[in-house]
Image (cartoon, rainbow over all chains, first blue to last red; front, side, top):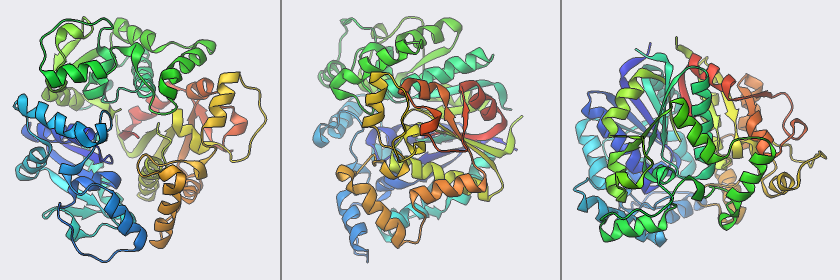
Length: 159
Length: 159
Length: 159
């Protein structure tokens, strides 16, 4: 039976702008008293990476993936008007000028206020991400756990 | 309690092809008697811009964003096979050849038939869009209003 | 009334990575006893094309579209790190190394296990795809049929 106080968001994208949209929706739902679970998968996992390099054993291809993909939420590019990486800086300036929250603040707020942050273990295996490389205090689940939560939610988005 | 006669669509993308998909679904749902609300946010707002330049006060970065982004639904690019802007023209020819509705016609139809067109005020603040620059007769809301509507809907898409 | 055992996924994207996500979710839901319908539309239709060239009558622009778009699930590019087509091969190697299922295996499994695979006829008309060019054993429907199914489902994703 759907529960009107639960929302799930699959965060597939690793783009600055799409992750910002996901976090704004998540924080908004939380403020309205909803339970919110965000499932980070594929490129979305980049937003959960720690900024500093963590020494872990990886297979060669996965090591290469790891080196080529942005390490953490401060390194994400935009899906449009990225301007070789200048786009996110400009967007940050605009957000600050409007008194809004920057991307890392939105993520911190989500975690502190109680949004459930979950990393998809299947994607982690594929891209070669280890738990040590991702933010502390997050959960790790597979697709079955996502589906079980989605069954209980009344809004399920794929971003 | 979900109401089987309501649908919401977040239109995040500003791509010709994704906006076409969103409008086709919205018009289809309306034809079946559903209430439909489309929330235009981020790049999706470009589809709601008036074609002619409107004089409004903007901060420098937002003025630049405004100049670089497409002004209105006739100027959108495609996410694939854009061919430097030729893609949408070719797609228009194909749609006409098949007797289908072009993108602006789909939007006009949606508005006339009663799809609720809503612009996200938070994204407008970020990208520097003023109400005068967007189509007349649309609504302006924040994320809380979206969530309230999504709670009443049984299909909620993010496009 | 929503039925907790039904899921629908609109597969709009033709990207290797997004289609993989869609198929993993679909196969997962099926394994949990759900009914699953995947609606392939726009670029997503490329995943349903037969690999060999099928002789059919097409209008010139549609013939060009058909030639420029990937023919079948083995030819899809990635939305990120495509590396001129090397990305999917590298991802295949990684998936194999992890003992996972490759993209065509995920699709075959979905079909064999009972995921309902549906091609959007409106998109087919636009892109000029004929039934002979798409995989055997799939269904063909319009947007009204999608909406009718989504009304019966409790999770509806747009990928």
